Amino acid sequence: MNKNYYAIIMAGGVGSRFWPVSTTEFPKQFHDMLGTGETLIQKTFTRLSQIIPKENILILTNELYNDIVLEQLPMIQQEQIVLEPAMRNTAPCILYASLKIKKQNPDAVMVVAPSDHWIEDEVQFCSNLQYAFDFCERDENLMTLGILPTFANTGYGYIEFDKLDSRPIKKVKQFREKPDYATARKFIQSRNYLWNAGIFVWSAKTVLKAYEEFQPVMYDHFMNGYETLNTPNEEAFIRDNYPLAQNISVDYAILEKAQNVYVLPATFDWNDLGTWGSLYDKLPKDEQENAVVNASVYLENATNNIIRTEGKKLVVIDGLTDYIIVDKDDVLLIYPKNKEQDIKQIVSKIQ
Image (tube, rainbow, N blue to C red; front, side, top):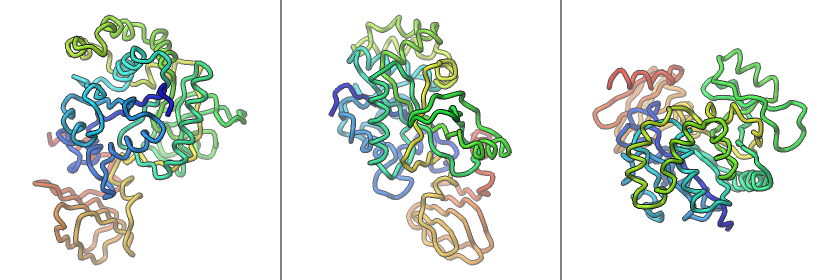
Protein backbone atom coordinates (compact mmCIF):
# COMPACT_ATOMS: atom_id res chain seq x y z
CA MET A 1 0.00 0.00 0.00
CA ASN A 2 1.17 3.50 -0.81
CA LYS A 3 2.22 5.26 2.41
CA ASN A 4 1.41 8.63 0.81
CA TYR A 5 -2.30 7.78 0.54
CA TYR A 6 -4.59 9.25 3.19
CA ALA A 7 -8.32 9.47 3.82
CA ILE A 8 -10.50 11.87 5.76
CA ILE A 9 -13.83 10.28 6.70
CA MET A 10 -16.44 12.95 7.41
CA ALA A 11 -18.51 11.65 10.32
CA GLY A 12 -19.84 14.72 12.11
CA GLY A 13 -23.36 15.01 10.69
CA VAL A 14 -26.58 14.45 12.59
CA GLY A 15 -28.66 12.87 9.79
CA SER A 16 -31.90 14.41 11.02
CA ARG A 17 -33.89 13.22 7.97
CA PHE A 18 -33.50 9.71 9.46
CA TRP A 19 -35.20 10.70 12.70
CA PRO A 20 -36.22 9.06 14.99
CA VAL A 21 -33.50 6.41 14.42
CA SER A 22 -30.79 9.01 13.79
CA THR A 23 -30.47 11.47 16.67
CA THR A 24 -27.95 14.08 17.81
CA GLU A 25 -26.74 11.63 20.46
CA PHE A 26 -26.38 8.71 18.02
CA PRO A 27 -26.43 9.75 14.32
CA LYS A 28 -27.08 7.51 11.31
CA GLN A 29 -23.39 6.87 10.44
CA PHE A 30 -23.16 4.79 13.62
CA HIS A 31 -26.22 2.65 12.78
CA ASP A 32 -26.51 -0.52 10.71
CA MET A 33 -29.16 1.03 8.48
CA LEU A 34 -29.35 -1.83 5.98
CA GLY A 35 -29.07 -4.79 8.32
CA THR A 36 -25.67 -5.93 6.96
CA GLY A 37 -24.00 -6.47 10.35
CA GLU A 38 -21.82 -3.36 9.88
CA THR A 39 -22.61 0.28 10.59
CA LEU A 40 -22.21 2.84 7.81
CA ILE A 41 -18.93 4.20 9.21
CA GLN A 42 -17.57 0.66 9.57
CA LYS A 43 -18.44 -0.08 5.92
CA THR A 44 -16.76 3.17 4.82
CA PHE A 45 -13.59 2.43 6.80
CA THR A 46 -13.39 -1.14 5.45
CA ARG A 47 -13.85 0.11 1.86
CA LEU A 48 -11.17 2.80 2.10
CA SER A 49 -8.69 0.52 3.88
CA GLN A 50 -8.52 -1.65 0.75
CA ILE A 51 -6.38 1.05 -0.88
CA ILE A 52 -5.25 3.27 2.02
CA PRO A 53 -3.15 2.17 5.04
CA LYS A 54 -5.41 1.92 8.09
CA GLU A 55 -3.13 4.20 10.10
CA ASN A 56 -3.55 6.92 7.44
CA ILE A 57 -7.34 7.11 7.76
CA LEU A 58 -8.57 10.04 9.86
CA ILE A 59 -12.09 10.25 11.26
CA LEU A 60 -13.36 13.81 11.31
CA THR A 61 -16.22 14.10 13.77
CA ASN A 62 -17.76 16.11 16.57
CA GLU A 63 -16.25 15.63 20.02
CA LEU A 64 -19.63 14.21 21.11
CA TYR A 65 -18.92 11.06 19.08
CA ASN A 66 -15.33 10.29 20.08
CA ASP A 67 -16.23 7.29 22.25
CA ILE A 68 -18.65 5.87 19.66
CA VAL A 69 -15.93 6.04 16.97
CA LEU A 70 -13.41 4.24 19.19
CA GLU A 71 -15.99 1.58 20.02
CA GLN A 72 -16.99 0.96 16.39
CA LEU A 73 -13.45 1.25 14.94
CA PRO A 74 -11.24 -0.43 17.56
CA MET A 75 -8.38 -0.76 15.06
CA ILE A 76 -7.64 2.99 15.05
CA GLN A 77 -5.74 5.14 17.53
CA GLN A 78 -7.09 8.19 19.37
CA GLU A 79 -4.81 10.46 17.32
CA GLN A 80 -6.63 9.37 14.14
CA ILE A 81 -9.84 10.99 15.40
CA VAL A 82 -9.96 14.68 14.50
CA LEU A 83 -12.46 16.31 16.83
CA GLU A 84 -14.49 19.43 16.03
CA PRO A 85 -15.45 21.39 19.16
CA ALA A 86 -18.17 23.17 17.14
CA MET A 87 -20.05 22.55 13.88
CA ARG A 88 -18.59 24.79 11.17
CA ASN A 89 -19.46 23.03 7.89
CA THR A 90 -16.90 21.31 5.67
CA ALA A 91 -14.34 24.01 4.76
CA PRO A 92 -12.81 24.55 8.24
CA CYS A 93 -12.72 20.86 9.18
CA ILE A 94 -11.12 19.81 5.86
CA LEU A 95 -8.51 22.58 6.26
CA TYR A 96 -7.78 21.48 9.83
CA ALA A 97 -7.37 17.80 8.88
CA SER A 98 -5.34 18.64 5.74
CA LEU A 99 -2.86 20.68 7.77
CA LYS A 100 -2.44 17.77 10.18
CA ILE A 101 -1.81 15.41 7.26
CA LYS A 102 0.66 17.76 5.54
CA LYS A 103 2.63 18.16 8.74
CA GLN A 104 2.84 14.38 9.02
CA ASN A 105 3.58 13.77 5.31
CA PRO A 106 4.16 16.69 2.89
CA ASP A 107 3.76 14.31 -0.08
CA ALA A 108 0.32 13.09 0.98
CA VAL A 109 -2.55 12.72 -1.47
CA MET A 110 -5.95 12.26 0.12
CA VAL A 111 -9.59 11.39 -0.41
CA VAL A 112 -12.31 13.17 1.56
CA ALA A 113 -15.34 10.90 1.84
CA PRO A 114 -18.64 10.99 3.74
CA SER A 115 -19.10 8.25 6.33
CA ASP A 116 -22.73 7.47 5.52
CA HIS A 117 -22.84 6.65 1.80
CA TRP A 118 -23.63 3.22 0.41
CA ILE A 119 -21.37 1.76 -2.30
CA GLU A 120 -21.78 -1.91 -3.22
CA ASP A 121 -19.22 -2.30 -6.03
CA GLU A 122 -16.10 -1.72 -3.98
CA VAL A 123 -13.80 -3.03 -6.73
CA GLN A 124 -14.95 -0.25 -9.07
CA PHE A 125 -14.78 2.29 -6.25
CA CYS A 126 -11.13 1.41 -5.54
CA SER A 127 -10.36 1.51 -9.27
CA ASN A 128 -11.88 5.00 -9.60
CA LEU A 129 -10.09 6.18 -6.48
CA GLN A 130 -6.72 4.90 -7.72
CA TYR A 131 -7.29 6.70 -11.04
CA ALA A 132 -8.04 9.93 -9.15
CA PHE A 133 -5.00 9.54 -6.89
CA ASP A 134 -2.74 9.10 -9.95
CA PHE A 135 -4.23 12.23 -11.56
CA CYS A 136 -3.73 14.34 -8.44
CA GLU A 137 -0.20 13.08 -7.80
CA ARG A 138 0.87 14.07 -11.33
CA ASP A 139 -0.31 17.68 -11.21
CA GLU A 140 -1.93 20.36 -9.07
CA ASN A 141 -5.54 19.20 -9.49
CA LEU A 142 -8.59 19.43 -7.26
CA MET A 143 -10.88 16.55 -8.04
CA THR A 144 -14.29 15.17 -7.27
CA LEU A 145 -16.06 11.93 -8.13
CA GLY A 146 -19.41 12.59 -9.80
CA ILE A 147 -22.32 10.18 -10.01
CA LEU A 148 -24.19 9.56 -13.27
CA PRO A 149 -27.75 10.70 -12.50
CA THR A 150 -30.51 8.11 -12.93
CA PHE A 151 -33.45 10.47 -12.41
CA ALA A 152 -34.23 14.17 -11.87
CA ASN A 153 -33.32 14.30 -8.18
CA THR A 154 -33.93 17.66 -6.48
CA GLY A 155 -32.13 16.66 -3.27
CA TYR A 156 -28.58 16.67 -4.72
CA GLY A 157 -26.23 19.34 -5.97
CA TYR A 158 -25.02 18.89 -9.56
CA ILE A 159 -21.66 19.23 -11.31
CA GLU A 160 -21.63 20.62 -14.85
CA PHE A 161 -18.70 19.54 -17.01
CA ASP A 162 -17.55 20.55 -20.47
CA LYS A 163 -19.71 18.73 -23.02
CA LEU A 164 -16.87 18.69 -25.56
CA ASP A 165 -14.36 17.13 -23.16
CA SER A 166 -13.89 13.54 -24.34
CA ARG A 167 -11.29 12.61 -21.71
CA PRO A 168 -12.26 10.22 -18.89
CA ILE A 169 -11.61 13.01 -16.36
CA LYS A 170 -13.61 16.13 -17.25
CA LYS A 171 -12.93 19.80 -16.57
CA VAL A 172 -15.63 21.17 -14.25
CA LYS A 173 -17.52 24.17 -15.65
CA GLN A 174 -19.52 24.92 -12.52
CA PHE A 175 -21.23 23.52 -9.45
CA ARG A 176 -24.99 23.90 -9.38
CA GLU A 177 -27.15 24.09 -6.27
CA LYS A 178 -30.01 21.68 -5.58
CA PRO A 179 -32.43 22.44 -8.45
CA ASP A 180 -36.20 22.40 -8.71
CA TYR A 181 -37.71 19.49 -10.63
CA ALA A 182 -37.91 21.26 -14.01
CA THR A 183 -34.27 22.34 -13.79
CA ALA A 184 -33.18 18.86 -12.69
CA ARG A 185 -34.91 17.39 -15.75
CA LYS A 186 -33.01 19.82 -18.00
CA PHE A 187 -29.76 18.78 -16.35
CA ILE A 188 -30.50 15.12 -17.06
CA GLN A 189 -31.43 15.81 -20.67
CA SER A 190 -28.24 17.83 -21.22
CA ARG A 191 -26.14 14.74 -20.42
CA ASN A 192 -23.23 16.76 -19.04
CA TYR A 193 -24.33 16.96 -15.42
CA LEU A 194 -23.40 14.65 -12.56
CA TRP A 195 -24.62 14.35 -8.99
CA ASN A 196 -22.22 15.86 -6.49
CA ALA A 197 -21.42 13.01 -4.09
CA GLY A 198 -19.11 15.07 -1.88
CA ILE A 199 -16.14 12.74 -2.52
CA PHE A 200 -12.99 14.79 -3.15
CA VAL A 201 -9.40 13.89 -4.05
CA TRP A 202 -6.32 16.14 -3.99
CA SER A 203 -2.79 16.39 -2.66
CA ALA A 204 -2.22 18.13 0.64
CA LYS A 205 -0.04 20.73 -1.08
CA THR A 206 -2.65 21.53 -3.75
CA VAL A 207 -5.64 21.91 -1.45
CA LEU A 208 -3.70 24.02 1.06
CA LYS A 209 -2.48 26.26 -1.76
CA ALA A 210 -6.13 26.73 -2.77
CA TYR A 211 -7.12 27.64 0.81
CA GLU A 212 -4.26 30.14 0.99
CA GLU A 213 -5.44 31.77 -2.26
CA PHE A 214 -9.22 31.73 -1.83
CA GLN A 215 -9.67 31.68 1.96
CA PRO A 216 -6.64 33.60 3.28
CA VAL A 217 -8.31 34.63 6.55
CA MET A 218 -9.30 31.04 7.39
CA TYR A 219 -5.90 29.74 6.25
CA ASP A 220 -3.97 32.23 8.41
CA HIS A 221 -6.31 31.55 11.34
CA PHE A 222 -5.38 27.84 11.37
CA MET A 223 -1.73 28.42 10.43
CA ASN A 224 -1.38 30.43 13.67
CA GLY A 225 -1.54 27.09 15.43
CA TYR A 226 0.35 24.97 12.88
CA GLU A 227 3.19 24.28 15.33
CA THR A 228 0.71 22.78 17.81
CA LEU A 229 -0.77 20.28 15.36
CA ASN A 230 -0.03 16.61 16.11
CA THR A 231 1.32 17.67 19.55
CA PRO A 232 -0.24 17.73 23.05
CA ASN A 233 -0.90 21.48 22.58
CA GLU A 234 -3.21 20.95 19.60
CA GLU A 235 -6.36 20.38 21.66
CA ALA A 236 -6.13 23.73 23.47
CA PHE A 237 -5.49 25.67 20.25
CA ILE A 238 -8.39 24.01 18.44
CA ARG A 239 -10.78 24.39 21.38
CA ASP A 240 -10.14 28.14 21.49
CA ASN A 241 -9.84 28.88 17.77
CA TYR A 242 -11.94 26.40 15.81
CA PRO A 243 -15.32 27.93 16.81
CA LEU A 244 -14.11 31.29 15.41
CA ALA A 245 -13.72 29.89 11.87
CA GLN A 246 -16.24 30.86 9.19
CA ASN A 247 -19.17 28.48 8.75
CA ILE A 248 -18.87 27.61 5.04
CA SER A 249 -18.76 24.52 2.83
CA VAL A 250 -15.64 23.52 0.90
CA ASP A 251 -17.70 23.80 -2.30
CA TYR A 252 -18.34 27.52 -1.73
CA ALA A 253 -14.99 28.23 -0.13
CA ILE A 254 -12.69 26.57 -2.67
CA LEU A 255 -14.19 24.52 -5.48
CA GLU A 256 -16.49 27.16 -6.95
CA LYS A 257 -13.58 29.63 -7.13
CA ALA A 258 -10.71 27.45 -8.39
CA GLN A 259 -9.93 26.88 -12.06
CA ASN A 260 -8.14 23.54 -11.64
CA VAL A 261 -11.20 21.45 -10.67
CA TYR A 262 -11.93 18.17 -12.44
CA VAL A 263 -14.53 15.43 -12.15
CA LEU A 264 -14.40 11.71 -12.86
CA PRO A 265 -17.81 10.19 -13.71
CA ALA A 266 -17.88 7.27 -11.28
CA THR A 267 -18.40 3.71 -12.50
CA PHE A 268 -19.58 2.39 -9.14
CA ASP A 269 -23.15 2.31 -7.84
CA TRP A 270 -23.90 4.92 -5.18
CA ASN A 271 -26.60 5.91 -2.74
CA ASP A 272 -26.14 8.74 -0.27
CA LEU A 273 -28.65 7.21 2.18
CA GLY A 274 -29.80 10.72 2.99
CA THR A 275 -33.48 9.96 3.57
CA TRP A 276 -35.85 7.13 4.41
CA GLY A 277 -36.77 7.03 0.72
CA SER A 278 -33.17 6.45 -0.35
CA LEU A 279 -32.92 3.65 2.22
CA TYR A 280 -36.17 2.17 0.89
CA ASP A 281 -34.59 2.01 -2.58
CA LYS A 282 -31.76 -0.21 -1.27
CA LEU A 283 -33.84 -2.61 0.85
CA PRO A 284 -35.45 -5.86 -0.34
CA LYS A 285 -39.23 -5.61 -0.85
CA ASP A 286 -42.19 -7.95 -0.47
CA GLU A 287 -44.72 -8.63 -3.24
CA GLN A 288 -46.50 -5.34 -2.45
CA GLU A 289 -43.20 -3.40 -2.60
CA ASN A 290 -43.04 -2.89 1.17
CA ALA A 291 -39.57 -2.76 2.75
CA VAL A 292 -39.57 -4.18 6.28
CA VAL A 293 -36.70 -3.87 8.80
CA ASN A 294 -36.70 -5.49 12.27
CA ALA A 295 -40.47 -5.89 12.28
CA SER A 296 -43.13 -8.58 12.04
CA VAL A 297 -45.96 -7.35 9.85
CA TYR A 298 -49.56 -8.09 8.94
CA LEU A 299 -50.41 -5.97 5.92
CA GLU A 300 -53.56 -5.45 3.86
CA ASN A 301 -53.98 -2.86 1.11
CA ALA A 302 -50.49 -1.62 2.00
CA THR A 303 -47.95 -0.90 -0.75
CA ASN A 304 -44.62 0.90 -1.24
CA ASN A 305 -44.09 1.51 2.47
CA ILE A 306 -40.92 1.33 4.56
CA ILE A 307 -41.58 -0.15 8.01
CA ARG A 308 -38.93 -0.28 10.74
CA THR A 309 -39.27 -1.12 14.42
CA GLU A 310 -37.13 -2.31 17.29
CA GLY A 311 -37.33 -5.79 18.71
CA LYS A 312 -39.45 -7.41 15.95
CA LYS A 313 -42.59 -5.56 17.04
CA LEU A 314 -45.78 -6.70 15.31
CA VAL A 315 -47.09 -3.97 12.99
CA VAL A 316 -50.60 -4.22 11.52
CA ILE A 317 -51.39 -1.89 8.61
CA ASP A 318 -54.41 -1.55 6.37
CA GLY A 319 -54.81 1.11 3.69
CA LEU A 320 -51.45 2.87 3.64
CA THR A 321 -49.42 3.54 0.48
CA ASP A 322 -46.05 5.31 0.15
CA TYR A 323 -45.51 5.90 3.88
CA ILE A 324 -42.59 5.85 6.30
CA ILE A 325 -43.50 3.97 9.50
CA VAL A 326 -40.73 3.97 12.11
CA ASP A 327 -41.01 2.97 15.78
CA LYS A 328 -38.05 3.88 18.00
CA ASP A 329 -38.12 4.11 21.80
CA ASP A 330 -40.88 6.55 22.71
CA VAL A 331 -41.39 7.90 19.15
CA LEU A 332 -43.68 6.63 16.40
CA LEU A 333 -43.26 8.28 12.98
CA ILE A 334 -45.95 7.85 10.30
CA TYR A 335 -45.11 10.18 7.45
CA PRO A 336 -45.68 10.37 3.66
CA LYS A 337 -42.62 9.38 1.64
CA ASN A 338 -43.15 12.25 -0.78
CA LYS A 339 -42.70 14.73 2.10
CA GLU A 340 -39.58 13.09 3.57
CA GLN A 341 -37.43 16.21 3.02
CA ASP A 342 -39.65 17.96 5.60
CA ILE A 343 -38.69 15.60 8.42
CA LYS A 344 -35.63 17.73 9.17
CA GLN A 345 -37.86 20.78 9.76
CA ILE A 346 -40.28 18.74 11.87
CA VAL A 347 -37.44 17.59 14.12
CA SER A 348 -36.20 21.16 14.65
CA LYS A 349 -39.72 22.28 15.61
CA ILE A 350 -40.18 19.40 18.04
CA GLN A 351 -36.84 20.01 19.69
